[in-house]
Each structure stands twice: as C-alpha cells, then as structure tokens.
Length: 212
Image (cartoon, rainbow, N blue to C red):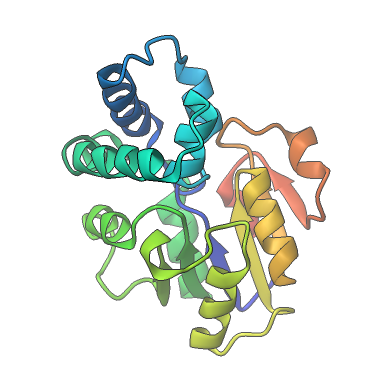
C-alpha cells in the first residue's frame, strides 16, 4: 500500500461506537413504543444517515417524523455517545505510522464532525488530521461522492493517489462513486463476501494491514 492520501470512515472503521449508538437508538425507539427492534438490527444500520436508519428500523417514511427522531437521537448522543466509544487497538499505531510516512490523513463520515473531533482530541493532536468531513458538512450523505470529492479538492489530492477505508457496503459504494480505491476492514457487521461484491484493493481483518 503506497497511497499519498488515506481517507477513513469512523464508526466500525477507526472506532467501535456500537454500544453508544445502540444506547441512543434504544432510548428514542422505546420512547415511541418501538420495543421489538434488536441490537443487531440497529448495528446493521451503522454508516447510514439517522433518518435512513430510523426508517429502516420503524418503517416510517414521513420526513418530518424522521427529522424529529434524528433531533431526539442527537440529544441522547450528546450524553451517551463518546463515553461509549472505543478505538480499535490498531487505530492509533496505524494512523501515526501512515502520518510518519508522509501521508495525508482524513475522515469522511455520516457522524457529526464536532463529535468525532471531540472524541479524537483525547488521543491525537488537534492538527493531526488533514481534514475531517462530517454529516453536517455535506448536502448528500454517503454513498454520495460529495464528501470524498470535497476532501480531494481541499487536500489537492488526485483520485489515483487516494485510498478510502471503510467497513460497510455504503463505504464501498462511496469509494466507487468517487473514483478512488477502496480497502474494506472487517470491524463491523458487514461480511467479507458483502464487501467483495464491490471494487476493492484489499479486504482486511485489521487496519494494521494498511502498513504492509
């Protein structure tokens, strides 16, 4: 692997925030009497927008109601999310080594940028990442290429020198739509076979394989 720019998803790629996500969804869903949704069903929606996730989990399609659910979720996330998020063991060593090798490092996520930075500032210098694009920074969420394209323009990187790293089919589609290479990591709920259905450079068991 010899790319000049590495762009990462956040949830299930750099960190396991599934406990925080499930907690927030569970509080909102229970408040509205959706008590039969399983933790696994919630985890399978990680990487999608909150509106998409709530629609999948409840069957609701009304935009106003889904927006209301998102706002309720955000309030709960302010309390529960970062306290229930854990970096994968390989994350910091891998990011630091890539940076040491001179690579540009960024994050493209549907998660709010402020929440990602608030969490990562506990572990990395404030200026470590060359760019972080969150859900509030784009008009169209992944798998739209907008976030990746914005990062490439900001970093003055080309598609050919960029690798996008993620754990889900949404991430694989994002890379494909943006015209950049994709590396899948099996940290989440998506299987290797599901990721292999998309163009990819490698499917990894660990982020550390990026250093090979």
